[in-house]
Length: 219
Length: 347
Image (tube, rainbow over all chains, first blue to last red; front, side):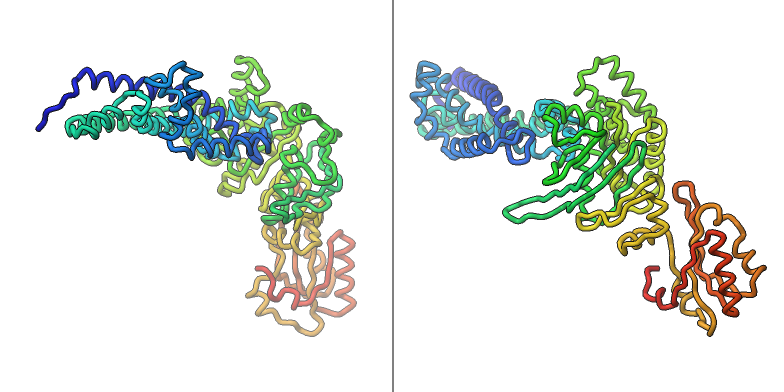
């Protein structure tokens, strides 16, 4: 009853694949998403770089990408993926849609974090004659840093969920293992084991995020 | 120094426009501590934000040191702002940075070198009485200490003007007094022009030399504090003055007050020198009148004593008239009033 056909090596491979996909797409996604979030805040009406047209393009674009279910996005952008990584299957191929999925999400989270900054601080910055770049760099980002870390934590956990679907393009990973070996072949041991691994992942990342945020805030 | 010429400010939101300022004329001279007082919604916050162009006037001009702020380019305006420090009701300090770094920010924006910044920040912290708090976070400080950090930050770039936006409204009376003393010291030692907006008359009384009273987007009265406190003309101004200078007979005195035939009530005003002379004594000695003092109050404004008195005089008409002339000749303001004036009054 407690037998399984999945080997320890397969588990290890799945864990490595998940970590690789999450790590890479988080890194690149943040690189794209954070500037987007900043732009959303500074170009909005009343922002330090108010720009009606830029905001009215960025805002709906992010909403459109975010409203696509990941599984649809994954398949829909196969040609684009092929263009970027020269293949449409495998772990690397999964990373491209993961980035496109997570970057707008990070943008939105960053926007929320930055909007939490006390507007009085921005007023003080403006009264000091700070340039828009200085407002962002010396006032907005330092005041939001704790909240930004928590946002990235949320994004990371969202990514772990999305990687489960990466199996559709042969991406591998823990989630894929659970679906293909556990769910589709009725292998309870695999289902339980993968769930435990995912729970540990999520718990670990959340605790790490909380600790970092608390340490950096120090106030 | 600071001059607002026929300034209007209109906010338009969803097609509904709201006139916050309606034709403001204002002049602040170098070295002034200029107070602007008004109830919430009078437009004082908008007014002070025009001086450093956090708000742009819809119509009219704002001059600072002779320059029209509206004629500046964005870059020139940023440079001009470094000459105008500002402190806020809720301090607006960066919670994520230590006191030292908060005060250093204006200098970092000016790209000063590290040693210079260090020296200046420590000097400023010492000046505001927080020499030992450089390494603390704002959350570890009291309200008064936070405002001191705000003041040090505002002074960092050596401005010639300091704007105070309800700077003491979130503080207790004792802390308010100490912050006001600090502002007074800044004005005196660095010759920085200070502009304060407040809804507390005591703030004006304590440190301002000039005051403007605002209501519904207009300045309804302005002048030297002594003038405005001594002779408030507009009812709103009178209400503000009443909050710091009691100027009416208390209800219990009023109730037991007998109006005999031939008796009359007078309001007396004694300013400066004549407030310290034994004038009432001399009057009683020289004229055959009965004097009943119903109310007396002395207030110091701008190092000048302002005395208010309400007396009842009873006697022969000629003696009363002579006594009144005596008072007037000695520089006392005299105004005959009826008892009913004091009914239903603020007490």
